[in-house]
Image (cartoon, rainbow, N blue to C red; front, top):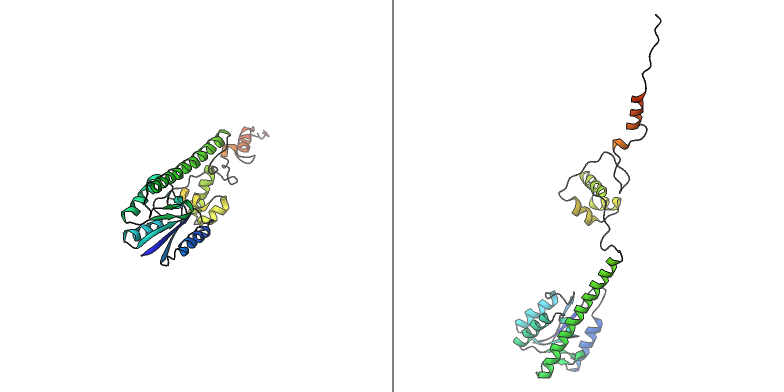
Length: 236
């Protein structure tokens, strides 16, 4: 049977080196040689993770003797999820050992179980506080008039994207031309048709209609229409 080591970070910009080093030092001191490392780069709020799912499969198959983790929140941040994991470990007689937090369920005592439940509750509490802070920050920004999300794109640009798409231009070339993302072009042009305009203005501005035409347009024609006809004098 193996000693399982579970490592997790939330983003690609982080690494598991510090977690791995501490747990490796701990298991070497106890001469546990047959190990397997399970690792995820994903939020602890997600119950299903590739590394964790593989770990649980091996636990259910009876391959795991003990589980080492850096901190309790590496396994999960939801109290309900942590409780489910602990139940799974207990069901298959796999002790959870977290050296940095003094957790070792191989020594089953009421004090150890109490500590485990308290730490799980604290992890969920911290997650809730972070969520509340983010929501408060967004609300404050809205009250100051800050516009959240992407800037709106004019209807003209969308119509121009449809025209360019109909002409066979690629999504990327349209995005570069109009200054929007290729994903926006794809989402806005899929299954839609061009709404024709009278004339084209610069990108982002609607075209001018005939009633606003210049001197050579409709206004010039009206002035010509208002002129009196020239009469030819008679020689009679």
